Image (cartoon, rainbow, N blue to C red; front, side, top):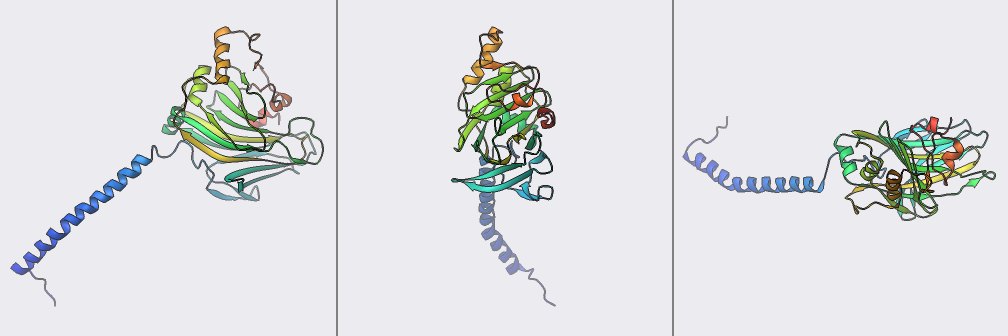
Length: 303
């Protein structure tokens, strides 16, 4: 049996070992603490306001027969002959989510896809303290099987807090804003076939509408195609970003909304469309944005 040294020589050896290892332990702890501090400084909040903002996480989707983004809730409506495809691709120089819809044109039903997530608590406060960026590549055309009788699709970002809805509609037309007490539609100037980056200030929109800041919202990407536009349609989303505000002044769209509150006159604001009801024709028109009080696509598209 081996016995440990407990005499004077053994005690001196232990003392020398402690003297040598103590400084190393202190240095190790300092390094670890410094690394942790750096990580915390680099990470402004956790979790981030928008989860998986660039669509890096994917899972199998049996209902689509392919894949879908993992943390984004999927909702869709289609007829028997329609198809929906979600893919991670490279378009130009950017990795992107591609949303594709095949509209068979057999009926007038609207086919749509919604990808959304709920933002609440500290995440929604962070979202309203800063600006939301979104980079998109609208196609604006398709390999259609026949002539379309109107706009070929609807492509937008929507926020909804259960009472108030903001729709940011990507359109190749002059920016306008449609308003109602519970809903606003803002047209974002976006050229088909080109990557475009937009900044959205939710706090400013709520302030201009005189809405109370919400405790939670749903944030969604919506792409829809009417039954009259048969063929394949596709849109691309590079991703979201959340950054510090770059401006404190009202933009063109918000100046219109502010003028509406001041004058109270519809006649002096030709850019404003106040509409109490929604029709499919109005929803797809890029000249007169829709005014709605619900975010349900089934109701919005008269399905």
